[in-house]
Image 1 (cartoon, rainbow, N blue to C red):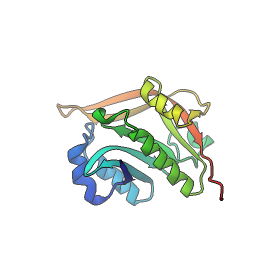
Image 2: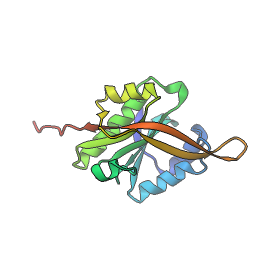
Image 3: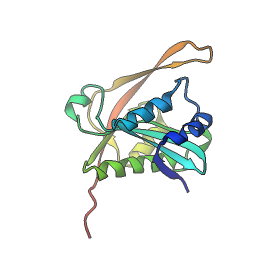
Image 4: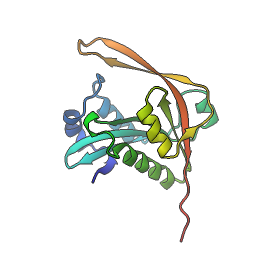
Length: 172
């Protein structure tokens, strides 16, 4: 149904045409460079040649304290996005499942993410997939973007940090 795979250089024109960059020029190209440098895996969901969504799996662990010190080797999910008209069709779950599989394939058994407190739809998805509150205090995630007039803006979101313990498959 949906193909999930890391972004490739040849995909950039399709991605740039098919997914809005949210006012962040060269966002996908920068993340592809990070992937090429081994910092992350930039997963995309595809239906034919149409990109439907993405997820950034960072291998260097959380960037914010206190998570950074407490769980430095925990790969972190970020930038989970599914096109508005394609939401609630299992794409986000497929992207998360693929990320979890990649984490396990590297011999790791925990994955984490920052979940926006007000994003109830995402919260439901994470809970269904087995993510639980890791017990850290609430924190703020901020990012910059350019509005339609080209002015730089800052947005923020209050978050909780969730983790999931991944079960290592038993040999049969």
